[in-house]
Image 1: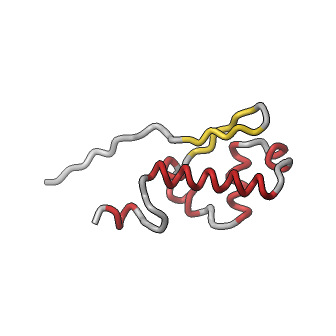
Image 2 (image 1 turned 90 degrees about the vertical axis):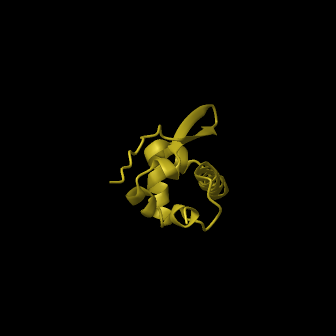
Length: 94
């Protein structure tokens, strides 16, 4: 009989500095699949960010600053996963 024991890992996060304060966003690999799948719209991504960064801070950002924030999170998530763009973990193991 085959057996596999899943080892739980500490959540990986991205530290975001805005002004003189710091905030932490969980990287996608540390989130539940359902949470990541739900980030397919601008509104859903904005709601995700507001869970970890106060709404008034997010609302004070320009669109360019917000886009930089989303891009940094995406790149850090991709780097932490070790996957190339467009590659899934399932295709990596085959």
